[in-house]
Each structure stands twice: as structure tokens, then as C-alpha cells.
Image (cartoon, rainbow, N blue to C red; front, side, top):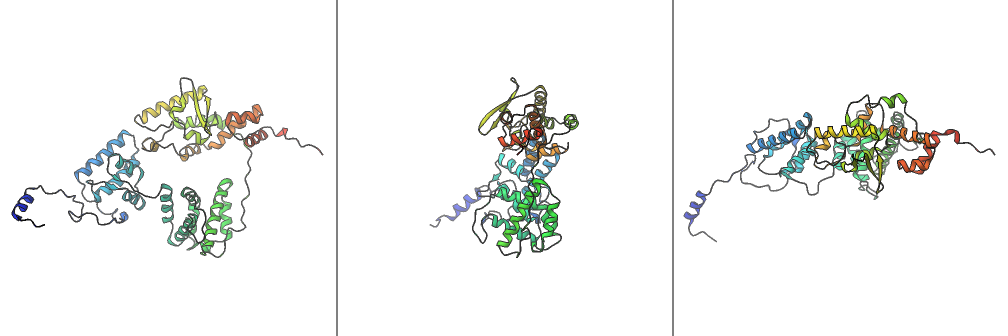
Length: 428
């Protein structure tokens, strides 16, 4: 249809206000033709374009929220750097794709993705990925990309085999399992990549020398990952011989051992951190596992009655809090309320990361292990010492099963360790 009055059309166009266009668009008025992958590593070192007023306001909100949530300086720096880089090149007039934030994190140092995404989502400035990779898959990709090309390509082929995409069809492993495999092998792969150009050059003696530096469960996990790696490469005909063939790691059977009395007595006096002191009491006094300590919730605590509820195998176990643990719980609650008064995380124990995480996760295993490692002790040692002490007093495996929720075989092992004199051999 043709307009019969072109003068009227021009008059209407002249009266319309000019359309506001983002200064970050290369061609004003042109929309995105197709999604493109941006390489943020190439612009990270360039001078940033001037921020728009909307972007400046968004960064100011970030600083205010960081101050309210007591973020440490390095956390605020990483989030601000990530957000500033995205806003400088994409602008703040439209939501930012989640893929770009993750690409910035993967390609640019001193950046972070998780908290940046949470901040943008809370302010309605995020375009989430529809079918994006999971966290474990992204971690595997980052670890593989950190390796040199030769070794990295072979490790990438191993990952494909584990995902069921090799020459032979088999069950696909979960990304979290592949991440654990790769995490245990990462330092050895980096070391080998400085010496050889391909894993074909790795010999059986190098595998043996690697395993000699490890002990116990660490040796077993690394040996298992190495066998999986080289068997997959041989299946794909990348290597001709499996250097792990014939290598066996002896099984580790350790009897529970008590901690030295002076070390156990001085644990609480060597640290003044309320979180560490409470973790020590929960494990060393009540023999609560590290997993249970991490997942304790505020609703599980009953201070007026002086007890705490544990959830094991779908059942509830109530433990009484003696005066020491009761006092440490109150001290931690006061510290928790002082540092994070506005947190919505329902877990009893918090760190700086989990207190401000909108997903409300429990504290990580590393957060507990790191604090205990500074005291030269582990969670397993503390719990084993408590159960062993109870075995010295009672010598009844049924009692240990009921109190600590351990298996019958484990209870028998503790009783045998506590009373070796009762293991008499019947004469023939």
C-alpha cells in the first residue's frame, strides 16, 4: 500500500522524539543478526570505554551491597572488575547474557562469575543460559584448557571417552566424577607437560615414581585416574602400550589411633576463631561427621533445651549439648549475627562466600579441612579419637552403633583397636 500523502508522513516523523540508542552499539538501530562468541581475553588489557550513567549507578549499587554483606576486599575487586569489563563493552541499557560473564571468567584473570551472575540476576540485568554447561563441566573445560596443546588434546580425548563418546560405546560418567579424576591428576599432568610433548612418552617407571610420592587414599585415587586415562588413550589408539599395566597400589588398612592427650587438650586454646572452635567441639566431643557438620541448619538447634538434631538415613538423632559445646554454640551465634545480620542462609555454619550466596549452600569441605589443617589435625582423626575413647570405656560394639550411627563392622574394628588383648587365638 502506498501513502497518498507523503507530506503528512514526513510531518509525523519530524514530530516523533528521536529514538535513544545505546552508544555501545556499533550500528545504531541494528539488532543482533545471530549470536556470536566474544573473545574477552583480547580486550581485557585495552583501555575501557567510558561508562554510561546507568552503568555507573549499577556499580555503585554493587559497592553498597558489598558493604552491607561484609564482602572481603578481594571479592569486591573481582566482582567489580568482571562487571566493569562487561558494562564497558556491552553497556547497561540491556540485560547481559550469562554466556558473556562466564566467558570473561574463563578468559580473564582476577574475575569471578558466580557472584557477578547473582548480582545481575537480582537486579534484572541477566539473560540466563537456556542449556548451559553445569559447574563441573565448566571446571573440566578450564582445567583442560590450562594444559599445553599436545597433552591437552589427549586429555580432552580422555574426557570424551569418559562421557561415552569414544570408539566403543559404554556408560557415560557424570561430570563431577570426571572433575575429581582431573583434579587429582592436574599437578602431575602439568609437570609431565613440561618434560614431554605427548603422553605417549610417559613410561611405567615415571608412573611408579609418581605413585611413590603418595600414600593411602591419595595413592589409590591417583592410580585409579591414571589407569582410566591411559586405558582410554589406548582404546582410542593414541598410545600403543599402557604404562599403568601391572602397577598395583597396596590396600590401606589402618587401625584407629588416639590423638596425643596434650594435642587434643590444646586444640581449643590454639585458635580463637569461633567457627573453628565450634567445629572442633562438634567433631571431637560428639563425633559428628564432617558432612553432618556442614549441613547443620539453624532449625536443628534447640538452645532452650540444650540439644541438636542430626539427620541420618532419613531418621532424626538428638544429641545433648554439654556445657563446653553449648557455650561455643552461643559464641558462634553471636559472631554470626554480628558479621552477617541480613543473611538468609539457613545453615548453622557460614563463611564469607556462603553468607552472601543467593543459592544458600553449606560451607565447603575445604573450609573445614583448611581450618583444622592449620592445627595439624583432621576431622577424621578427631572423630576416630572420640569413638575410640568410647570403645575403651564400653567395649560394646552395639553401643557404638547406637550412639555414633556407624556400621557394625566399623564398631567391631574400634573395639578390637581399643582392646587388642581380647583377640585371643583358640589353640588347636
